[in-house]
Image (tube, rainbow over all chains, first blue to last red; front, side, top):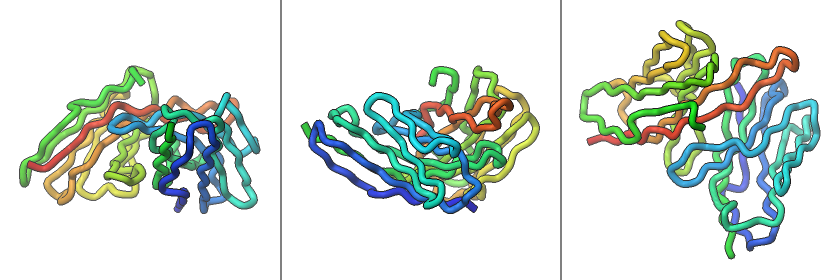
Length: 113
Length: 118
């Protein structure tokens, strides 16, 4: 089955710097890759997603890139702010698997003022 | 998301007791999912249901049971067979597959239930 590896597990940056979180997946049939942000004790919230027919997607300070050949995708946050501090999860799913998401282990991002 | 309601927010289980976590959605979503989250870890799929009266095991189904008698509801029972139930449980739902684009849709999560052992 699908396996998703996420790195790093913790990331600390200064306010205004960029942050990059990387994920690799094992199942070449996976074609949907969402990213979630989870603040302490709260629900995961979708922040951006990408489908396999697209190589890059941007939404203001957030971007995701996908390399299907290498089976990895990355989250890029520019001009980080303290409120970006949270745990970020990547996930992958296959169109034919009933929407099942396989999650990475999470990255705890800390943005220092 | 306001359309997915989980209850209770906190739940305590005694030794040998079964407990049921509620998940209700008013989004008209077909598919619903239960995940378990342990501290410092990702989400692991327990069970999921793509349609009423049907459900499938996820990666960690042992010690859990579900039912899907109504589209809106997908309760999870943590049985006494689950020896380490302490975790944060999250319910999610997904809108029907976009048949025009044959693509998955994002999952929307409830606020979660934190289960502990007494």
